[in-house]
Image 1: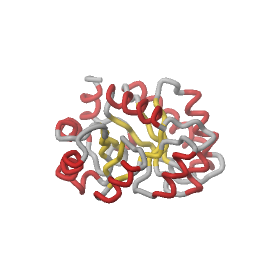
Image 2: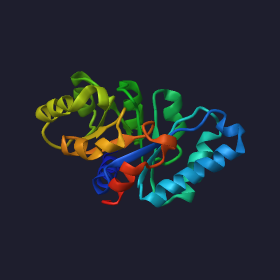
Image 3: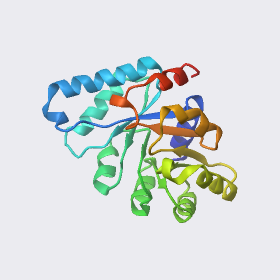
Image 4: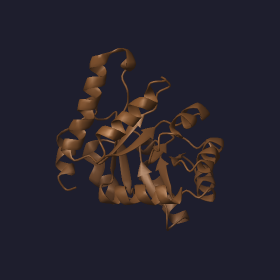
Length: 211
């Protein structure tokens, strides 16, 4: 897991942004939604986005979709969002996913992920879970929901653990605030629902030109 953590940290140091794309309702029953989905990833890649997370789905076809994405977009660092159950964890173990994330800390999920060398970055919203994550060997954590927890929470975590922890902010992040948040203590940010149709807006287009 350490290698996967280091690889993700290096990728996010080069471009401190992850864009999350979630599947539409009835995705696997509607062909044009699949076509639009791949077009969306292609557009994000053309804009210069390097790290994309795909929302987990319980549909049996979802695993094949991820493999197809990995095959078609080799230049993008593909991850999986919303690993919250044993079912979701088990479904990604054979897919060779570089990274995945959970919105909260679930010790059982993380212990099983570590056992299988699968990086599932824990969502952190309090000190207790932060300490547990560190004890499990995590040096990259997701602060969630960042928009509600605020900058002071990150500063408190940094004061407690000054070195070797990489902080990702997620939840309610707006493109106009990327630079401010990165300068205020976050090492990288996740953006998704705040983007219309999950494609770059004017603020994100400008930001991406620096990377």
